[in-house]
Length: 400
Image 1 (cartoon, one colour):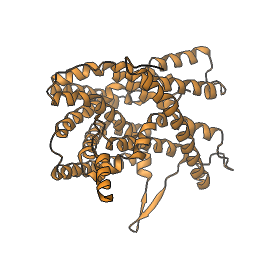
Image 2 (cartoon, rainbow, N blue to C red):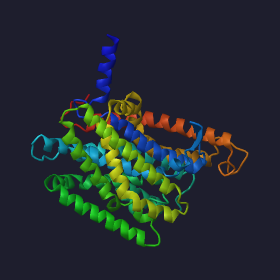
Image 3 (cartoon, rainbow, N blue to C red):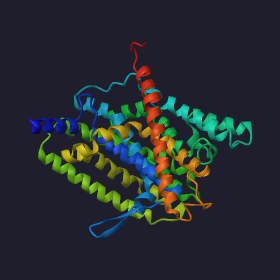
Protein backbone atom coordinates (compact mmCIF):
# COMPACT_ATOMS: atom_id res chain seq x y z
CA UNK A 1 0.00 0.00 0.00
CA UNK A 2 2.78 2.39 0.94
CA UNK A 3 4.68 1.50 -2.23
CA UNK A 4 1.62 2.24 -4.34
CA UNK A 5 1.23 5.63 -2.69
CA UNK A 6 4.88 6.46 -3.28
CA UNK A 7 4.59 5.47 -6.94
CA UNK A 8 1.42 7.55 -7.33
CA UNK A 9 3.07 10.56 -5.68
CA UNK A 10 6.15 10.10 -7.89
CA UNK A 11 4.04 10.07 -11.06
CA UNK A 12 2.08 13.08 -9.92
CA UNK A 13 5.24 15.05 -9.19
CA UNK A 14 6.98 14.23 -12.46
CA UNK A 15 4.04 14.46 -14.87
CA UNK A 16 2.79 17.55 -16.67
CA UNK A 17 -0.23 18.86 -14.78
CA UNK A 18 -3.73 18.91 -16.38
CA UNK A 19 -3.35 22.68 -16.74
CA UNK A 20 -0.20 22.18 -18.79
CA UNK A 21 2.29 23.17 -16.09
CA UNK A 22 5.69 21.42 -16.27
CA UNK A 23 6.99 20.88 -12.71
CA UNK A 24 10.64 20.38 -13.70
CA UNK A 25 10.77 23.94 -15.03
CA UNK A 26 10.33 25.25 -11.47
CA UNK A 27 13.77 23.93 -10.65
CA UNK A 28 15.26 25.25 -13.88
CA UNK A 29 13.80 28.72 -13.26
CA UNK A 30 15.17 28.66 -9.71
CA UNK A 31 18.60 27.63 -11.00
CA UNK A 32 18.72 30.46 -13.53
CA UNK A 33 17.55 33.17 -11.11
CA UNK A 34 19.57 32.10 -8.10
CA UNK A 35 22.72 31.70 -10.20
CA UNK A 36 22.42 35.40 -11.08
CA UNK A 37 21.81 36.15 -7.39
CA UNK A 38 24.95 34.19 -6.45
CA UNK A 39 26.95 36.22 -8.98
CA UNK A 40 25.84 39.54 -7.51
CA UNK A 41 26.55 38.35 -3.97
CA UNK A 42 30.01 37.25 -5.12
CA UNK A 43 30.58 40.72 -6.57
CA UNK A 44 29.82 42.33 -3.22
CA UNK A 45 31.37 39.79 -0.82
CA UNK A 46 34.16 38.11 -2.81
CA UNK A 47 33.12 34.93 -1.02
CA UNK A 48 34.15 31.95 -3.14
CA UNK A 49 33.49 28.64 -1.35
CA UNK A 50 35.22 25.39 -2.19
CA UNK A 51 34.67 21.83 -1.05
CA UNK A 52 36.32 18.43 -1.26
CA UNK A 53 34.84 15.69 -3.42
CA UNK A 54 36.45 12.28 -3.95
CA UNK A 55 39.72 13.63 -2.66
CA UNK A 56 39.69 16.66 -4.96
CA UNK A 57 39.18 20.30 -4.03
CA UNK A 58 36.42 21.87 -6.11
CA UNK A 59 36.06 25.64 -6.17
CA UNK A 60 32.81 27.40 -7.04
CA UNK A 61 34.74 30.43 -8.26
CA UNK A 62 34.22 29.81 -12.02
CA UNK A 63 30.48 29.34 -11.54
CA UNK A 64 30.13 32.41 -9.32
CA UNK A 65 32.15 34.63 -11.64
CA UNK A 66 29.93 33.74 -14.61
CA UNK A 67 26.52 33.87 -12.95
CA UNK A 68 25.54 36.74 -15.24
CA UNK A 69 25.31 34.23 -18.10
CA UNK A 70 22.09 32.75 -16.72
CA UNK A 71 20.06 35.89 -17.40
CA UNK A 72 19.93 34.45 -20.92
CA UNK A 73 18.40 31.28 -19.48
CA UNK A 74 15.68 33.32 -17.79
CA UNK A 75 14.77 35.01 -21.08
CA UNK A 76 14.87 31.72 -23.00
CA UNK A 77 12.50 30.17 -20.46
CA UNK A 78 10.18 33.13 -20.90
CA UNK A 79 10.08 32.60 -24.67
CA UNK A 80 9.37 28.90 -24.14
CA UNK A 81 6.49 29.43 -21.72
CA UNK A 82 4.91 32.23 -23.74
CA UNK A 83 4.85 30.22 -26.96
CA UNK A 84 4.03 26.80 -25.48
CA UNK A 85 0.21 27.25 -25.58
CA UNK A 86 0.42 28.13 -29.28
CA UNK A 87 2.72 25.17 -29.97
CA UNK A 88 0.28 22.84 -28.21
CA UNK A 89 -2.61 24.24 -30.22
CA UNK A 90 -0.72 23.71 -33.45
CA UNK A 91 0.08 20.10 -32.54
CA UNK A 92 -3.62 19.58 -31.80
CA UNK A 93 -4.50 20.83 -35.29
CA UNK A 94 -6.20 24.01 -34.10
CA UNK A 95 -5.70 27.28 -36.00
CA UNK A 96 -3.63 30.06 -34.48
CA UNK A 97 -5.76 32.15 -32.14
CA UNK A 98 -4.50 35.15 -30.19
CA UNK A 99 -4.79 34.66 -26.44
CA UNK A 100 -7.38 37.00 -24.96
CA UNK A 101 -6.06 39.24 -22.22
CA UNK A 102 -2.37 38.59 -22.98
CA UNK A 103 -1.24 42.15 -22.25
CA UNK A 104 -3.47 42.44 -19.20
CA UNK A 105 -2.01 39.29 -17.66
CA UNK A 106 1.55 40.36 -18.39
CA UNK A 107 0.97 43.81 -16.89
CA UNK A 108 -0.69 42.40 -13.78
CA UNK A 109 2.11 39.89 -13.37
CA UNK A 110 4.95 42.37 -13.68
CA UNK A 111 3.92 45.95 -13.03
CA UNK A 112 2.27 46.24 -9.55
CA UNK A 113 5.17 44.78 -7.55
CA UNK A 114 7.65 46.48 -9.92
CA UNK A 115 6.12 49.87 -9.09
CA UNK A 116 6.10 49.01 -5.39
CA UNK A 117 9.79 48.15 -5.60
CA UNK A 118 10.62 51.42 -7.35
CA UNK A 119 8.66 53.43 -4.80
CA UNK A 120 10.30 51.78 -1.80
CA UNK A 121 13.80 52.16 -3.23
CA UNK A 122 13.06 55.79 -4.10
CA UNK A 123 11.78 56.66 -0.62
CA UNK A 124 14.21 54.55 1.43
CA UNK A 125 17.42 54.92 -0.60
CA UNK A 126 17.40 57.49 -3.41
CA UNK A 127 15.81 60.41 -1.56
CA UNK A 128 17.53 60.04 1.84
CA UNK A 129 20.92 59.61 0.18
CA UNK A 130 20.24 62.51 -2.22
CA UNK A 131 21.18 60.51 -5.26
CA UNK A 132 19.48 62.93 -7.66
CA UNK A 133 21.25 66.27 -7.99
CA UNK A 134 18.25 67.91 -9.66
CA UNK A 135 14.52 67.35 -10.00
CA UNK A 136 14.96 66.64 -13.70
CA UNK A 137 17.41 63.79 -13.04
CA UNK A 138 14.84 62.06 -10.86
CA UNK A 139 11.96 62.78 -13.24
CA UNK A 140 13.69 61.39 -16.32
CA UNK A 141 14.80 58.28 -14.42
CA UNK A 142 11.22 57.63 -13.31
CA UNK A 143 9.88 58.33 -16.80
CA UNK A 144 12.27 55.81 -18.34
CA UNK A 145 11.37 53.15 -15.76
CA UNK A 146 7.63 53.74 -16.09
CA UNK A 147 7.81 53.35 -19.88
CA UNK A 148 10.21 50.37 -19.65
CA UNK A 149 12.69 52.17 -21.86
CA UNK A 150 15.27 52.36 -19.06
CA UNK A 151 17.64 49.82 -20.69
CA UNK A 152 18.12 52.32 -23.53
CA UNK A 153 19.77 55.07 -21.48
CA UNK A 154 22.90 55.07 -19.28
CA UNK A 155 21.27 57.26 -16.62
CA UNK A 156 18.41 54.80 -16.12
CA UNK A 157 20.29 51.51 -16.54
CA UNK A 158 23.96 51.65 -15.58
CA UNK A 159 23.82 54.67 -13.25
CA UNK A 160 20.27 54.64 -11.91
CA UNK A 161 19.66 54.95 -8.15
CA UNK A 162 16.52 52.83 -8.66
CA UNK A 163 18.31 49.45 -9.01
CA UNK A 164 20.39 48.63 -12.09
CA UNK A 165 19.29 44.99 -12.08
CA UNK A 166 15.87 46.02 -13.38
CA UNK A 167 17.09 46.27 -16.98
CA UNK A 168 15.86 42.72 -17.57
CA UNK A 169 12.31 43.74 -16.65
CA UNK A 170 12.52 46.40 -19.35
CA UNK A 171 13.72 43.85 -21.92
CA UNK A 172 10.91 41.46 -20.96
CA UNK A 173 8.22 44.13 -21.28
CA UNK A 174 9.59 45.22 -24.66
CA UNK A 175 9.46 41.59 -25.82
CA UNK A 176 5.90 41.21 -24.54
CA UNK A 177 4.94 44.15 -26.75
CA UNK A 178 6.03 42.41 -29.94
CA UNK A 179 5.35 38.81 -28.89
CA UNK A 180 1.76 38.40 -30.24
CA UNK A 181 2.89 39.49 -33.72
CA UNK A 182 6.06 37.42 -33.50
CA UNK A 183 4.11 34.35 -32.36
CA UNK A 184 1.64 34.65 -35.25
CA UNK A 185 4.47 34.98 -37.78
CA UNK A 186 6.39 32.11 -36.18
CA UNK A 187 3.30 29.90 -36.29
CA UNK A 188 2.97 30.46 -40.05
CA UNK A 189 6.61 30.38 -41.15
CA UNK A 190 8.79 29.24 -38.25
CA UNK A 191 11.93 28.66 -40.30
CA UNK A 192 11.80 32.08 -41.94
CA UNK A 193 11.12 33.90 -38.67
CA UNK A 194 13.84 31.96 -36.88
CA UNK A 195 16.37 32.69 -39.60
CA UNK A 196 15.45 36.37 -39.76
CA UNK A 197 15.44 36.89 -35.99
CA UNK A 198 18.70 35.01 -35.51
CA UNK A 199 20.38 36.95 -38.32
CA UNK A 200 19.23 40.22 -36.75
CA UNK A 201 20.57 39.19 -33.34
CA UNK A 202 23.91 38.05 -34.74
CA UNK A 203 24.26 41.24 -36.80
CA UNK A 204 23.43 43.41 -33.79
CA UNK A 205 25.93 41.59 -31.57
CA UNK A 206 28.53 41.68 -34.34
CA UNK A 207 28.19 45.45 -34.48
CA UNK A 208 28.31 45.70 -30.69
CA UNK A 209 31.54 43.69 -30.59
CA UNK A 210 33.12 45.98 -33.21
CA UNK A 211 32.73 49.23 -31.26
CA UNK A 212 35.15 50.23 -28.47
CA UNK A 213 32.59 50.40 -25.66
CA UNK A 214 29.80 47.80 -25.39
CA UNK A 215 27.91 48.32 -22.06
CA UNK A 216 24.88 49.98 -23.64
CA UNK A 217 24.62 47.47 -26.50
CA UNK A 218 25.14 44.09 -24.87
CA UNK A 219 21.81 44.09 -23.02
CA UNK A 220 19.35 45.41 -25.60
CA UNK A 221 16.37 43.48 -26.96
CA UNK A 222 17.83 42.87 -30.47
CA UNK A 223 20.81 41.15 -28.84
CA UNK A 224 18.44 38.57 -27.29
CA UNK A 225 16.16 37.79 -30.24
CA UNK A 226 17.78 34.43 -30.95
CA UNK A 227 17.61 33.56 -27.23
CA UNK A 228 13.85 34.09 -27.20
CA UNK A 229 13.48 32.25 -30.51
CA UNK A 230 15.36 29.23 -29.20
CA UNK A 231 12.85 29.15 -26.36
CA UNK A 232 10.02 29.17 -28.88
CA UNK A 233 11.66 26.42 -30.94
CA UNK A 234 12.02 24.36 -27.75
CA UNK A 235 8.30 24.85 -27.14
CA UNK A 236 7.54 23.39 -30.58
CA UNK A 237 9.76 20.38 -29.91
CA UNK A 238 8.28 19.82 -26.46
CA UNK A 239 4.71 19.99 -27.78
CA UNK A 240 5.58 17.41 -30.43
CA UNK A 241 7.10 14.92 -27.98
CA UNK A 242 4.57 15.63 -25.24
CA UNK A 243 1.75 13.92 -27.10
CA UNK A 244 3.82 10.83 -27.87
CA UNK A 245 4.17 7.79 -25.65
CA UNK A 246 6.28 8.46 -22.54
CA UNK A 247 8.47 5.36 -22.59
CA UNK A 248 11.83 4.51 -21.08
CA UNK A 249 13.74 4.93 -24.33
CA UNK A 250 12.54 8.49 -24.77
CA UNK A 251 13.38 9.34 -21.18
CA UNK A 252 16.86 7.88 -21.55
CA UNK A 253 17.40 9.82 -24.79
CA UNK A 254 16.46 13.16 -23.23
CA UNK A 255 18.49 12.39 -20.13
CA UNK A 256 21.48 11.98 -22.43
CA UNK A 257 20.55 15.33 -23.99
CA UNK A 258 20.55 16.84 -20.49
CA UNK A 259 24.02 15.50 -19.77
CA UNK A 260 25.39 16.75 -23.10
CA UNK A 261 23.88 20.21 -22.51
CA UNK A 262 25.35 20.42 -19.01
CA UNK A 263 28.79 19.47 -20.33
CA UNK A 264 28.57 22.05 -23.11
CA UNK A 265 27.44 24.79 -20.73
CA UNK A 266 30.29 23.87 -18.35
CA UNK A 267 32.76 24.52 -21.17
CA UNK A 268 31.23 27.97 -21.72
CA UNK A 269 31.39 28.73 -17.99
CA UNK A 270 35.07 27.75 -17.88
CA UNK A 271 35.77 29.85 -20.96
CA UNK A 272 34.13 32.96 -19.51
CA UNK A 273 35.58 32.47 -16.02
CA UNK A 274 39.09 32.90 -17.41
CA UNK A 275 38.35 36.46 -18.54
CA UNK A 276 39.21 39.29 -16.17
CA UNK A 277 39.08 42.43 -18.33
CA UNK A 278 35.50 43.74 -18.29
CA UNK A 279 35.38 44.65 -21.98
CA UNK A 280 36.82 41.29 -23.03
CA UNK A 281 34.28 39.62 -20.78
CA UNK A 282 31.38 41.46 -22.46
CA UNK A 283 32.62 40.58 -25.93
CA UNK A 284 33.03 36.98 -24.84
CA UNK A 285 29.49 36.91 -23.49
CA UNK A 286 28.09 38.11 -26.80
CA UNK A 287 30.21 35.68 -28.79
CA UNK A 288 28.94 32.63 -26.84
CA UNK A 289 25.32 33.72 -26.56
CA UNK A 290 24.06 31.75 -29.56
CA UNK A 291 25.72 28.50 -28.49
CA UNK A 292 24.69 29.05 -24.89
CA UNK A 293 21.04 29.54 -25.81
CA UNK A 294 21.04 26.40 -27.98
CA UNK A 295 22.50 24.37 -25.11
CA UNK A 296 20.08 25.95 -22.64
CA UNK A 297 17.16 25.00 -24.89
CA UNK A 298 18.44 21.43 -24.98
CA UNK A 299 18.78 21.48 -21.21
CA UNK A 300 15.19 22.70 -20.89
CA UNK A 301 13.94 19.87 -23.10
CA UNK A 302 16.12 17.33 -21.36
CA UNK A 303 14.92 18.06 -17.83
CA UNK A 304 11.28 18.28 -19.00
CA UNK A 305 11.27 14.98 -20.91
CA UNK A 306 14.10 13.01 -19.32
CA UNK A 307 14.15 10.41 -16.58
CA UNK A 308 11.68 10.82 -13.76
CA UNK A 309 14.44 11.21 -11.20
CA UNK A 310 15.62 14.39 -12.91
CA UNK A 311 12.08 15.72 -13.11
CA UNK A 312 11.46 14.89 -9.47
CA UNK A 313 14.67 16.63 -8.37
CA UNK A 314 13.67 19.80 -10.23
CA UNK A 315 9.89 19.64 -9.76
CA UNK A 316 8.92 19.47 -6.09
CA UNK A 317 7.45 21.67 -3.37
CA UNK A 318 10.74 23.39 -2.58
CA UNK A 319 11.50 24.27 -6.20
CA UNK A 320 7.88 25.37 -6.67
CA UNK A 321 8.31 27.81 -3.78
CA UNK A 322 11.67 29.07 -5.09
CA UNK A 323 10.20 29.56 -8.56
CA UNK A 324 7.19 31.38 -7.10
CA UNK A 325 9.32 33.98 -5.30
CA UNK A 326 12.02 34.17 -7.99
CA UNK A 327 10.74 37.38 -9.60
CA UNK A 328 10.79 39.23 -6.30
CA UNK A 329 14.13 37.70 -5.33
CA UNK A 330 15.58 38.93 -8.59
CA UNK A 331 14.29 42.46 -8.08
CA UNK A 332 15.34 42.82 -4.44
CA UNK A 333 18.57 40.90 -3.92
CA UNK A 334 21.06 43.32 -5.45
CA UNK A 335 19.59 46.39 -3.78
CA UNK A 336 19.61 44.64 -0.40
CA UNK A 337 23.21 43.52 -0.94
CA UNK A 338 24.43 46.98 -1.93
CA UNK A 339 22.64 48.79 0.89
CA UNK A 340 23.71 46.31 3.59
CA UNK A 341 27.30 46.84 2.53
CA UNK A 342 26.87 50.60 2.52
CA UNK A 343 25.14 50.56 5.90
CA UNK A 344 27.90 48.25 7.24
CA UNK A 345 25.55 45.38 8.04
CA UNK A 346 27.20 43.40 9.53
CA UNK A 347 29.96 45.50 11.06
CA UNK A 348 33.62 44.80 10.39
CA UNK A 349 36.92 46.20 11.60
CA UNK A 350 37.95 46.62 7.96
CA UNK A 351 36.86 49.51 5.77
CA UNK A 352 36.58 47.14 2.80
CA UNK A 353 36.00 43.75 4.46
CA UNK A 354 35.54 41.93 1.16
CA UNK A 355 38.95 43.11 -0.07
CA UNK A 356 40.50 42.07 3.24
CA UNK A 357 38.91 38.63 2.80
CA UNK A 358 37.35 38.89 6.24
CA UNK A 359 35.86 35.39 6.16
CA UNK A 360 33.48 35.70 9.16
CA UNK A 361 32.14 38.96 7.70
CA UNK A 362 31.77 37.41 4.22
CA UNK A 363 29.75 34.46 5.49
CA UNK A 364 27.55 36.52 7.82
CA UNK A 365 27.00 39.22 5.20
CA UNK A 366 25.85 36.73 2.54
CA UNK A 367 23.64 34.96 5.07
CA UNK A 368 21.95 38.19 6.20
CA UNK A 369 21.39 39.36 2.61
CA UNK A 370 19.88 36.01 1.60
CA UNK A 371 17.57 35.84 4.62
CA UNK A 372 16.40 39.43 4.20
CA UNK A 373 15.84 38.97 0.48
CA UNK A 374 13.83 35.78 1.05
CA UNK A 375 11.65 37.45 3.68
CA UNK A 376 10.92 40.46 1.45
CA UNK A 377 10.38 38.31 -1.66
CA UNK A 378 8.03 35.90 0.10
CA UNK A 379 5.97 38.68 1.65
CA UNK A 380 5.54 40.62 -1.59
CA UNK A 381 4.88 37.50 -3.67
CA UNK A 382 2.05 36.24 -1.48
CA UNK A 383 0.68 39.56 -0.20
CA UNK A 384 0.93 41.68 -3.34
CA UNK A 385 1.97 39.91 -6.55
CA UNK A 386 -0.31 36.87 -6.43
CA UNK A 387 -3.43 38.56 -5.00
CA UNK A 388 -3.24 41.30 -7.64
CA UNK A 389 -2.70 38.76 -10.43
CA UNK A 390 -5.58 36.63 -9.23
CA UNK A 391 -7.95 39.54 -8.86
CA UNK A 392 -7.35 41.52 -12.02
CA UNK A 393 -5.90 39.22 -14.67
CA UNK A 394 -9.06 37.23 -15.41
CA UNK A 395 -11.91 38.94 -17.20
CA UNK A 396 -15.42 38.41 -15.92
CA UNK A 397 -14.25 37.03 -12.59
CA UNK A 398 -16.53 37.82 -9.66
CA UNK A 399 -14.88 40.13 -7.18
CA UNK A 400 -15.61 40.41 -3.52
